[in-house]
Image (cartoon, rainbow, N blue to C red; front, side, top):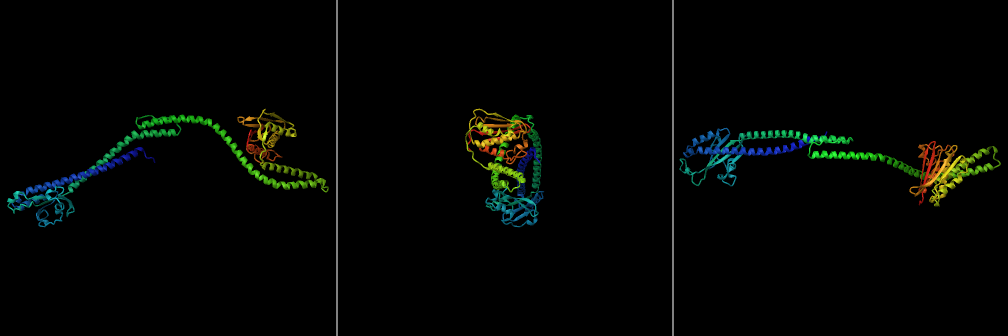
Length: 520
């Protein structure tokens, strides 16, 4: 599920605000606690000062009981837990807790530690330093404050036993007050601060939600919608600019990008239309090249196999032919079987001819090249063929380009190629027809070509890719399927190309390209 940008901004902002509020609440509560504690100490200090002044006259007149009554009345105030009067020897001469009266405090007691734990005398300590916080016997958290009762000049004329002049502090007034009121106030303050922080956090979240929805989320949603439309190919759409900030600049940039994409898309579509023809042409060329490579590999492997097969068959075939001729000439042989023996000899000679073609196909003779005229080579091949009976109803048309440059080739091998191709053309013509032979220059005068075109029955399209395969033939009988394979190998060894195009019922054209100069 996709988290919205509004949710992320509100969450992150609220986390920052919450952390700030918690820090503020902690510091605020700490300061409030200090202020409440200071106020409690000041209240205890004022109570101590009031009691000392209120009982001063009774103490001067040695009316101790009256002074103790005043202190007892003061101890019954709501927040006062205890009031003690301690003389200079550490003896508690009065306490609002009766059991403590008359006990002597040691220097390690809680009250005495306030005065004797430091290096400064009691008279130099402020109220905070003279205070202490502890848990009393009732389990309440209380604050104690000790205040010194100094030896004043008028004490020397008092009715009680006057103290020596060198004694500076006559005793202590220790006041213990409850901190429950301060704790209650602190709890209220903490609750109020937390409530205020939560309320402020809620208000900020609502304001942020409205702000991000209007200023950020809505423009970004428009941008996402426009992006999806562009991704779907709708390049004619544009975004409406609603602001002049960074989002507005982004929308303007996106509009410019969309226009550029549309322009590039149109150019690419136009270029693709023209590229398809080039791709088809290149694919056709690659297919032809792949077919030639596959054919070359096939011819190479089949040639190695054919060599072994031909040698293995040739020896027994020669023996069969020899003994068949001997049996035919033997007077003991029955004349009624001579026709059958002639069939054996004829078929054996036919097999021998196939073996010879296999050997010619498998033999990789290096061309014995010399400079020759292509027109002369074709004319020599025609002189060997045109007087045969198969050419009686066939018209041979020569369209030789004059003054063709000589090619560096083996003339005997090329004559064999043209004999095979012209014979195939004549055999494709059932009745009367014509074979047209055309020569000329091609490839910017770097190669010569010869096209042999007939108007025979043609070759089906599905068989065109197989016509150079060994042992593949379209003839009903008498064909070995090796003629074109041998021709392909010879032309390829000369660095040339041979291609066949045909239309069923209209004829076939064999095109041969040979380089003028080729070093094998």
